[in-house]
Image 1: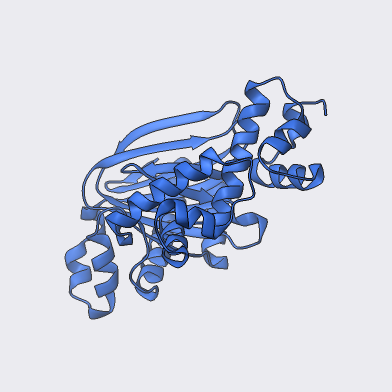
Image 2: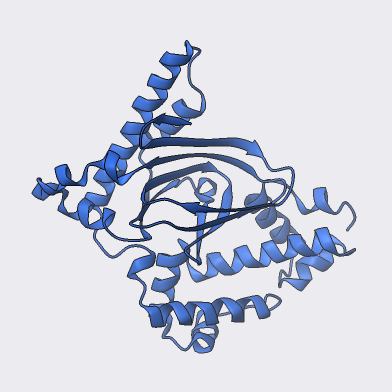
Length: 285
């Protein structure tokens, strides 16, 4: 919904009926994304970023992404996932960066907004979560009043994001990863995908990537929004789902092929990631 010139709202409260792959070109601006439920994988300018999934441990994460130029956007989500999210996007003109430049307190926010594919993550406040819930479940009003209601909540979300950017130390996001570290990340991801049936250690992955463990862990967190082990667990479960959907194998076989030693642990992790059990995909064990 285009609420007014330069202010766009996108909401989702759906269960995916099919695996979803979306590609688009995003214009310059600032996007605030808040996933209340579900997880998706997106590529921003070719860089993979994991969004969502924090509802499992009670810490819902908000993400702000700045673009100084048009760039590619690719999104993937999986069949059966329940996605509840709110995205608010504002154009550079709407943000009026010249006004921000007049305030020393907004210097950090201005630096962030002038970057390209810079990201900032923070734990969503109760107020931000409440605003998203209000947007997803607006009161019954006349159409013009509904638009005003949604507009007011969207603007509050932008204000919360700018405050979080101002309060969070610089250095978070895709642009903060050195090009050499990005190449090391690509090697690490390729190594992980080739050894999903094994119990991978941080030292083993770092050696394959050609980077020390601490630097690799930091680069993973900045680029993927997850630790290495969170990423590995996600890839194992994604691959297990692919096997269940594509090949005529049992749930136990899928668990074994991605390195799970107990079926109970596999089923629990699978349900947390996808919102459904492996038995719902492949009934027989």
